[in-house]
Length: 474
Image (tube, rainbow, N blue to C red; front, top):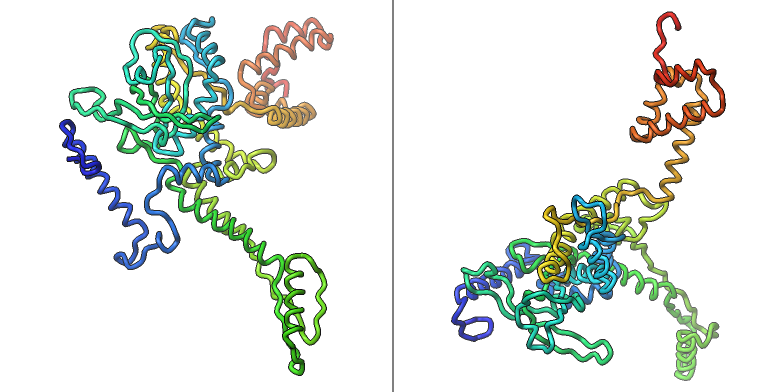
C-alpha cells in the first residue's frame, strides 16, 4: 500500500516505502528548524520563517523581489554572455558539425532557451528542456521513445511545477533504475491562458539539476539557503518605506486651555478642519482655545541593517556584494571583486552549464541525427573569454605603459640598470613574441632614419642592441 496515495503497488513496493520514509525523515528534520532550549523557543515561528518552502513560494519571490531575482539572474546572464560555439578538435576549417550547430542555434534561438532553462532550473529543484521532434503527430505519440533520425522543431524550457514526474523506472536491473520514465508536461496558451497536459517520454526530455546532493533528480533551489534573509530584507526595506510614509508627515496633538470650554458645535467644527487638513483639502487650521503641537518624527536610517542582510546573501550565494546590488561598473568596481566574480562564472561554465546543459543537449541531437556525428577526437565548447580586458581597461593599461616608457627613455642610466628586453617583458608586461616584434621595429626605424653609420648597423645585425661593457670601457 502506498501510504501517500492509498493505492496498492505491485512493483517497487520497497522503493516506495523507502522513499516515503525519507520524506518523513526530512519532515522531522525541517520541523526542528529554529528550536531552542529543548523546543521551549521556536525562532522560526517567532520571526515568521516558513519551515517548509513550496515551489510556488520560490517562484513568487523570484518574480516579485528584486534581490531574489538578482540571485538567480546575475550568475545566469554572466555565464551565457557572448557566443557559444562548437569546435571540433584537429580541424582548422569549419566542419559539418560546427556549421550545423550555428544553423540550429540561429533557427531555434538556442542560447535564449538555455538561459531560460538555467533560470527555471534554479528556482525549483530541477528544470527540463522539452525536445519537440517531428514524429509527434498527436499527444499520445509523445509517450513513445524516440526512434530513428529525427528533425528538431522546437525546444521548450519548463520549471518543476510544469514538468512533474509521472512515473519512475522501478526495475533494479535497468540502467535507468530510480530515474523518471514519463513526465506530465503542462503547456499554457499565452493568448487564452488555457492549459493542457500531456505525458512525455524521458527520451524527449533533457532533465537539468543544479545544486545536487544525494539525488540525481532533485537539487537544492538557489533561493533556499537565503530565503530567511530575503524575508528579513523585505521587512527592512518595506518597513523603511512605511516608516517614512507615516513619519514624514507628523501627527498632531491638541492641548486645551484650562479656562476654555468647548461646546459640541465647536468640537464638530474642529473635527471638520482636522479631516480637511488630513485629506489635503486645507493647509491652515483656525482654532480657539486649543494649542496644536506637532509630534516628534521617528524616521530611522535602515542602511546598515540592509547591508548586513546583503552581505549574508552575498556570502551564501558566492555573488560579490557589488555585483549583487548592480554596482559592478565604473569606479565602484574593485579588481578583487571582478576577479572573484569571473572565477565564479568560469567554474559555473565548466562544472554546470557545459556538462549539465550543453553537452547532454548536443549529444542527444547527434544521437537523433539532428546534428552530424563529431570526429573521433570529439568536440569542444568555445565560450567567450571572461578575462579578456575591455576597451576602457585597454586604454588605462596603454596610458600606464606609455608613461613608464617615457620615464625609462628619459633616463640616461636606464639601459645600464635594465636592458630594454627586460624592461619590455617584466615591467611593461609584454610577452616574448611582442618584445621581439618591438625590437625588430626599433632596428628598422633606426636604419630607415639613417641615425647609425653602416659600421654601427653591422654591429646591430650581429650583436644584441645592449652590449655588456668591459672593464676597459667603464
